Image (tube, rainbow, N blue to C red; front, side):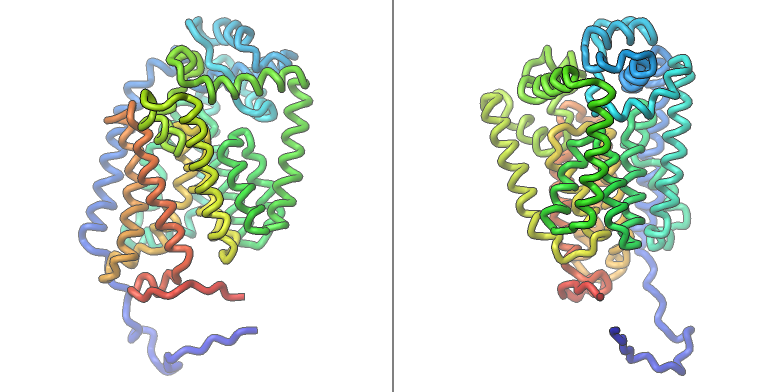
Length: 434
């Protein structure tokens, strides 16, 4: 047992303890102004996309169709492009191309109930579900946003309402808020030292395996054995469920589709077919493709991407071993986003967790003369606002990977420094208290 000593005289009145310095005026101005700007962009986005939603031009069409096919006994064909197009044209609206379902098959079980409704009604039912998940995530993270509330009482709510990837998820009927909820729930479990259950929870998000697998690998590298055991159990369960739904033949078709969406995605025809362009991916793959395409071959770009992603994972494998599991998860999430091979705008929803945690942890540094603490909070603020680039440079959205690299760097720095000392300007390694 450790006894902490303090120099505070027990007779000292609480009123004599120095109050926290107030947030500077520019922090309060930014807390009011930035959400207002982002809200305005969201409103214009909803106005612009509403007709497309009503005519079935949203990502939800692939999820809805997959759920319908599984419910009606066609689960063994959900990765068949031709059959997918036939069902989407019949159930939703005729189109020149289909939106292929490219997730693990177990996720279709979530959409089976929605497939009993007509498409428009199903879209709005899923929109309501996503809003409910957003509320659940807010409840889970709210107590970790107490310092942000000191800047402005409504700032935690404003950040949730105006974070642009959340809005994109809602508009497209995507599943990124399902993943966000799983990760926030895992954060709570890790805070309670329930690492096995946290691993179970996170592996349920393997429908986006490109994001979840790096998290699992990092916790394995960090020798979090209970977490890894829970992750392995859940991963086995969802894999077997997916195999049961589609059969081995469709697993092979799925593997071929993944190859087409990666190695062969350099052609414009493939990008149109799958509705994916690497230049819209704010990760290592998108950055390398955006810079090198036209100068290097597709094979060279693939090789550089794999080497760079492996290097980042290797670097982080030595970073999180000293951290509590709950503190390591935001680091793992940021790393996984950066090295994920497939990442779209709405997938940035999961970055809200590390952004809000680092801002809440070090916001007090803005009221001091500490340059290190300020650099960390300002980088996190930049990353919160960075998705706005989709409105102005959509064909160069891969450049948003640069703020993510900066966020990962400051998270590594913050992980090794005690937050109270950092806010006060004292640079001293953080120590985990038993």
